[in-house]
Length: 577
Image (cartoon, rainbow, N blue to C red; front, top):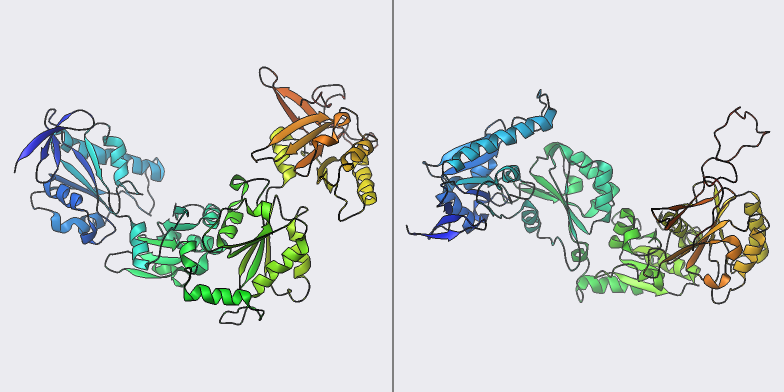
């Protein structure tokens, strides 16, 4: 065989075999390290490059459990030569216990260090070392522990391999991701709550490392609302391969080399122009009773979701998952525009003043078997669509339609977080809109809340057709509050036109307030303070302790209180703008 000299990426002289492409260092005499991906199990899925490297390597290393059987070696067996030097790297512990003084992690760290030292001895002697790895060497592979310890010291190359994720999708014949979907890959060893949250928000997902984690993974998939479409794949492309529905899998039969697959939601929807889509359209246009499953139960439902005050950063994982799973999105057009467009989903936008009609429309879709998400801004239960949907759903003919409400970050919390913690003690939430209740009721509630010395979060303070309410509210509040009481004006919080200012109650200008603004009015105890080296940051908070009345029953002799009314720690400062 002929050879030629080249220079590797580190600048060292190397010898490259013209037939195999395998390289060894020609100047320093050290060997070259290869991390060789073998694919998911079927030897025919090994890459040509992997086969060539194995054939020309002098040392073949592979990991195994204490029983000594190595899946990696079995995949590559037909390419091993009698003169290969084999280095079995046998784990001291897998799922059992250890008496190592450093516990499991200590035992594994010591094992990796010793394994790296064994391979380094071969490399120092000028031998080419190939470390075999199932799937891809740098994808949840044991090889990476050798790579981290040796790649900085020796010429190294990683040969990629087909992962078990790709193999599982291929064996299922199901697309993993389509269009702008995002694939999430998770280890089954995560805590159940973390798995549930990540699965709920995922477009599609694969959960690795099942085995003893399977019961936890199954519960997490079910809690995330994805059990119906979740699939199970065991030993993809290997002998003993098994596939099926995750829900039907016996937990006692699940090995470590198995994965749970939540396939593409887009791929599961009807293809445009197909018979399935024509059937769906016919169902949508029909006025007949709800679609039913084999048990005769209605298959549609409604979930009312809050998108927070702005875009995707404010979505909870549960809400993100519900939006992805919906077939129909119903809502005020401005709020629908915050939700990414997904192929196959139908969007039904409308004006902001037709809440009842919108709710009934969503419930009608659900009665016909559709999965519907009603979209609100902020939290759907705070002056938003949850009330309208539940009101309609509590009357005939919608009593049997399943309805869920998912919380969202509301405007009051978003604006409060921008300035600190003005809602740190008791507070009241009121709407200044007199479209659904008379101003007299609003004024009475403002008097009561202000008289109780509550912090106030005022929603819907003004609009193009309502310009006087803010001025009236300011006059009323000044009857109970000092003129320098801090007021936070939060407009479009989280959005591109965000503006958050702090003003004195006496200086509150109605002209600076519109429907996209929320007002947070401090109590008598709310504090403003300057922070930073130059005092350029203003923060606002309301102390959690409240001064006790001298006549309070059970009052301790020396209660812990905020400072004197005149101290900067307890009194409202001069709010910044």
